[in-house]
Length: 327
Image (tube, rainbow, N blue to C red; front, top):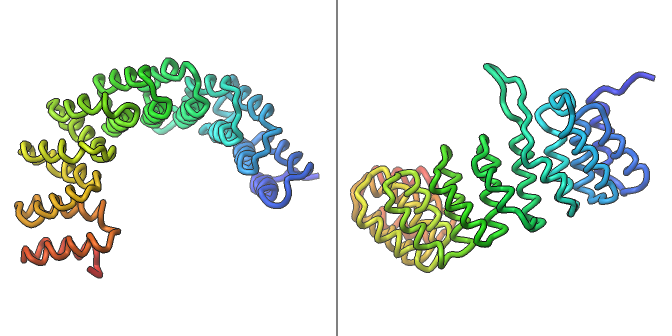
């Protein structure tokens, strides 16, 4: 009997995503889980998670462990497709065994790429961090602190978000260390500010506010955006004061977006005043912020249009029509 092609095997596994979850379905998914092709393994694993077949959890853990410990990891699971699917399925099935996640948390898989090698296991590490946070792992801050300095961006962001979810003083300390150390990806620091304001807004607000005046443009921008995203009662007043005292053109545009992010009535009125009275460049940046945050709201969009109409500035009107062709 001729062997099935990869396409045929994938088609057969996909058939198991439909119909009842009976013995034949489970048997077919188990076979797919142990297939020689990591693409078939990954698809079978996805379906197991989607169909919530928790009886297969022990096998999922065993396969994941085997792949992590493989002496030929690239040939066993190129691009970590199966391992990524396995962690997601275990999390979806509410697996409470932390061992596979701890095992995957520090896993690195270097694969050949043009000009050298690259780590393809970043998403595996990130998903393991997320799973551990959902399980409220008691040593989460301890095991995730090193990941805040992972070589890949995705695990760093996942670690920050997992610490945010966990909360507590240990998480705050780890996030403070990360912010002070900095990051090559500004969004990681931004997520850290957001996490701190979520964990304990009263205690962390002075720190984030202080970082607005730290002298580092990228950190200042991320602190401002975090204040806007947090939408604390104090956010608008802090950002308004900083805007009024700031003359750095590089910072003014993100500050306008941060003010808009607060979504308060005061912020909206304040931005309309800037749109009406400031220089054309500033007005255009203000319109950008207003359109991004308030564009879907018809009433506010009409107020923006009225403000622009009164200003009698063709370039500003053209920019508005670029955002909203029908006005």
